[in-house]
Each structure stands twice: as structure tokens, then as C-alpha cells.
Length: 277
Image 1 (cartoon, rainbow, N blue to C red):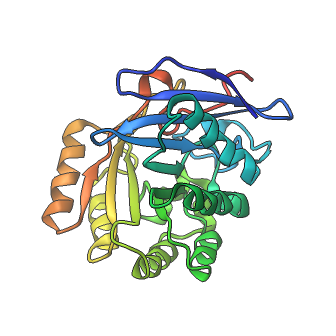
Image 2: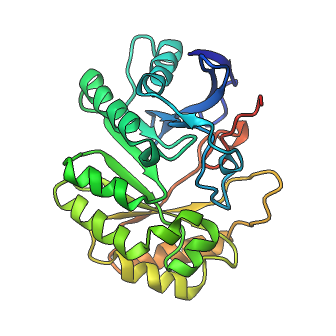
């Protein structure tokens, strides 16, 4: 695999990379600086994605194949050699193109390898919530960060925007992640909630979310929809975002607003896709 193209560094410090694989496919990854200068790599695990989430551009591209462990690792090595030749990343997350738990062996194998070569850096994956994959992580006593892309607090709403939710109910996910958090360090489970106008941002949705995560060892990350061309869904207002954050904190729930990185270079969450295709 080789670097096919990279953007200029954006104003927020991010750079998007496009890689060409041995079989002439293209994947993308992002390097960015976060929270005072932490060096973060956001890597892909599949070419395309079959999850078909309504708010994600990557999901418009049918999955062509899984990436191998070597291909996931190579993304990191190529970025590090390009921009951090005498340094190492502070964080590596599998949150680019694809669903990591649908490519379990390669994804978890890559995280284990990164731990071996980079030592004590933060390693995580982002998942729409595949019950069997999380069960396997528990059985194997994995200790990587999990970002659950929840994005709805009831199954009816969630099925409308995340099709695989029909086989992965919210209560099962919360129970599994509660168990996972018991043998892992503080802050290892994070619940991502993308606020979508008139879809998942009502007062009832907020109450349901509070009931789901209250007294759990989770951190809730509220997010605003990143711009995606021809997407009929709209982001919620800043006022609503602030209201949700206030209510969560009032209920003693650890919550933050997660800023988007790489928007101006189409490298933020939901924006990655094989643009050369």
C-alpha cells in the first residue's frame, strides 16, 4: 500500500490521506491534533461500508472487502513516516471507513500490534454496536477504548438511521458495555450521540438517554452532524446541543461536546469516502 494523495494541513491541524491498495482500491484516513496537541490517527478497517447509516457518506459505498491487519497497520506507519518521523502518535482510533467489529480479527489484531510497538498510547475503535463483536471483546478481555455510535435512545428511532440496529438492540448494547467497563479503566467506554434535527433530539429522547446511561461508567460525547453533500438530514441547533449538555451534567452524567476535526478537508466523521472512484 502507498500514499496516493494527501491534503494540505487544515486550519485545525488535520491532514487527510488517501491510500492505494495492492488491488487498486482506495481508502482514506485522517491525522489531526486534538485537545491541546495530542497527535491522533483515525484509520479505516474496510473498503467501503455495509452499515448504511443514514447520516454517513461512507455508507453510500458498498463494502468491497475487509482490510487485512497489515493494511490497517500500514496506514499508521505511512502517516507516521510522513509527518512524525521522529515521534509517535498519542492516540490511534479505528474510526475511519468501515465497521471495525465486522472485521474483528484484523481490527483487534492491529490494535494489539500497535500496543506492542507504541506502548502506552490510547487505542480505541468506533462501532455502531455489533452485539457479537462486543461479546467477543469481553470474552477475550480486551482493554481498548470503545466508542459506541448510539445516536438514538430508543430502538424505533435508531433503526431508522442505523439499519443494523434491528439485530442489535440498545438494552443489549448497554448491558454488554456496562460489563466491559467493569474490568477496564475509567473512560474506556464512550457513547457518541449525533444530534439530528427532529429525528433524535426531542425532550423524550433526552430523557431516555439519561435513563440509559445514568450511574454507568460511560462518558457521553454529544456531536453535531458534519456537512455531507446531498444529505437530507439536518443538524440540531446549537441551543439544543447546549440544552442537552446541561441536562446530562445536571444528572451527574459525564458528558462533553466533541468537536469535529477535518471538516474543511472532508475528513471528519461521516465524510470519508473513496473520492477517486
